[in-house]
Amino acid sequence: MYLAPNNANLTPAPAGMSSIMIDEATLSSLVAKATAGTKITYYVGHLAHDRQPVSQVLDHVACRALSAVANRALRFAEVEWVHLVQRRLAPNCWAYILIVRPRATRRTPVRRGGSGALVH
Image (cartoon, rainbow, N blue to C red; front, side):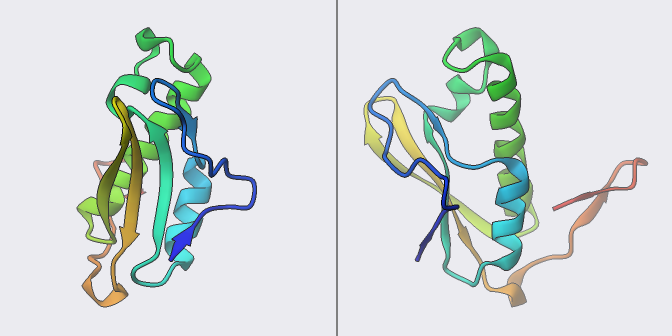
């Protein structure tokens, strides 16, 4: 099953173009509510390149938003809530997808440092 918010841009970006699919809060909400096997596309483009402000693909605000989404997806993977996969769409353009794991296999979120912030 593919899941994305109603306002998401579901048209894959052409090579060299980028598209932020969802924000960090929406990603967290979708993962929390999703059933095992749900696929969530959270970015289309070249993530490692596009999230760097010097790439000038996205403005500074969008770069920070993309980094927050990518970091959240990685934290979900680290606590085994999701699998992270990529699908190549064109040269230098991938769909970044997370697949929700069964709840029984998920580890409990851990607290990061002394800040008390939960890592999800």
